[in-house]
Length: 358
Image (cartoon, rainbow, N blue to C red; front, side):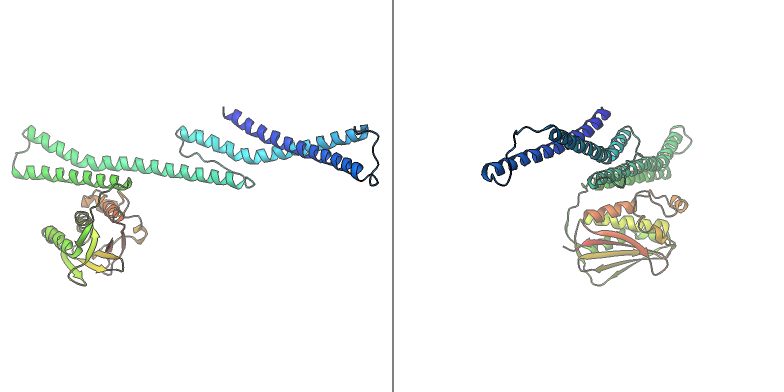
């Protein structure tokens, strides 16, 4: 079927150009006869009337020769034009078939002298194929990462429950608290995955209202302060005034702040964690800075990708899922704000989230 389509297009180009050339030649011959007839009729002195209007042998041979020469040139030009157009299109058709068959590495090619529109079509197809290949790679990575994150708590739950059922463990408070901690971890992971899924489909719900960011920061600090003190951290708050209002969802704001603070508690060295709230011309800016060890500057742009870990071994020891910072970015994007990471003044990392004031 593809071969028939290619032959049909090539034949169409050749026939069209041949008919065009024949038409031009016939029109020139007829117009010459018409001009000569007008001269003979209205200006008899300017031309001699021919004995017969039918073409003589030499004239007929000349007309046939001109038509055949023009037709040969038209066919040659048609073949060249068809090759220029069909060569990249054939490559594109083959690549589309390969892509439909599951070969995401298929790419089309275009020659340097290909028409601009065809070359653009080939480039757009290759860009689409690269995007599909990247999405497939990300999907495979997501599946592997999610399976890995779910395996550990599920394995622990299964082992503990089996031990309780067989009498290996005593059903005391510590065992139930351990099981509850694993269930809470699974709940957080599921909620993070839900937020990221909604964000990818532009359906993350944010209920914006006039919100005092300082008050929300205070409530989050009060909530996490015992855990931070137990881990050797001291939380400090810095504001330029008592109230900083933003147009945001307070629930999502607290979720983002908890994720940023939890990231600092898990991976930063014990010491001070400073939270600064300031205004910019269009946003309220919340910055959370720790004292080390910091993140490689080359990873600052990618640190908010799902399952991205600046230090795999350290992250595993911290027990994080690798989704917290991705959730923060999803929340910031849903508000029309942004989040970014820079090097801190104390040798650590500085995470900044900006939310619109209006």
